[in-house]
Length: 205
Image 1 (cartoon, rainbow, N blue to C red):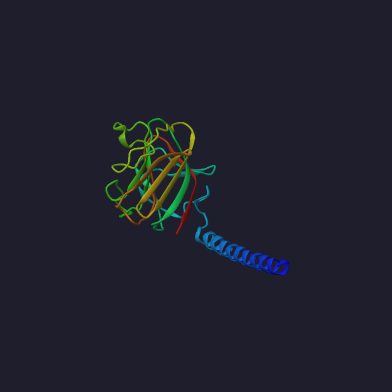
Image 2 (image 1 turned 60 degrees about the horizontal axis):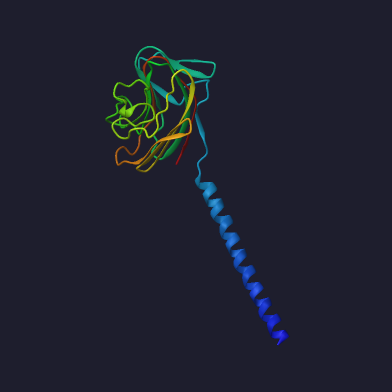
């Protein structure tokens, strides 16, 4: 009887170890696959040049001390590459009267509007506050009010298929699904006031 119990126990331990080993191997494979599936961050603007962008319009963009800024004219910095699914992060500084925004999945890189792309707004003093800073114009009102004038702020924008998520300084302001624009360049806008951008990075599939 003792021999039978010992043999049965030995078999159970062997089976358990085999199952644990299989799970561990599967976990390693899944982890490796997940790691490979996460794209690396690519810097679009590092403070030295605008090689990743085409200027559109007459905004007076200049680079100084790692920052690109404008305070006159009207225009955009439009990425040369087109993007569909991505995670964008950047820092911006605006004064009180500033009107700016991040346009994503732009259908026409020469004629950029909120009607042919998603405009993630930077406009604290927008007359209609429905789509102020943190919102997507005509699509999603911000879930949190974040005032951004006269300081550096961090924007994060994630677009995965129809799901659009936006964070301002860590506060989630938009999280929706919207069947609209699927692919296109990204544009940094200058509309009014003083607008500055730095540390523009993207992780795209």
